[in-house]
Amino acid sequence: MSDAADLPDLDDATVLWSAGADERAGRPLLVMLHGYGADEHDLFGLAAFLPDQYVIAALRAPLAPPWPAPGYSWYPIEDIDGRDASGVTAAAERLLAWVEAHAPAPARVGLLGFSQGASVALQALRCAPDRFAFAVNLSGYVAPGALDHDEELAARRIPVFWGRGTRDDVIPPYLVAHTAQWLPDHADLSGRVYVGLTHSVSEQELDDVRTFLEKRLADPS
Image (tube, rainbow, N blue to C red):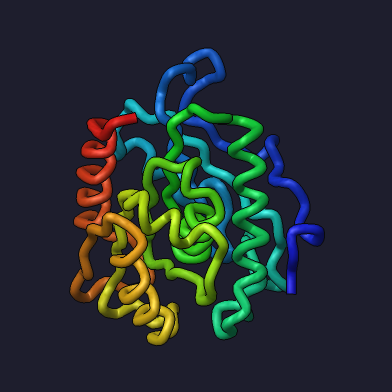
């Protein structure tokens, strides 16, 4: 089981940015968090299809999966079948440290994650509800267990988009059920269940994400 002390800091040298350092000031930041076995390039390809008002930063997870699995992970994969969410929380804390270093308050920051990355994004919202404007949960889940700021998150009603497919057999059904029960009570939830979609992102889902992000540009700061 990983805790925050076990995880290395996120590597700045691997971050993919959609804009140079001299083009980021005053623009909202969208942080992308890839899924298990992928890397920072995986979601960055979506940047061209999202509103260009955002500066996008695609991060690389800090752990290498056991050989011969490729890519990187935010927490050990066995955590998905357990109810101990300490690995997800540790990854969220590393994400928070990166955000504080690169987009300190009052910078406007949103999160977009897929699978493991989505779970880390939601956990980061729970750890620091005052630091994020919204989150996009693509095929991810809310980690079981209570956190100290859950009541604050529920009061803030931060916008969250949740997209998942009817043929996604990666996320265990009990975690889908937990997320479906938990998110409406703790966020301003929107989203869609996509018929026939597996553990992936469809063109229709990407269109919905773009619409969600466009609406967030009009939200009060």
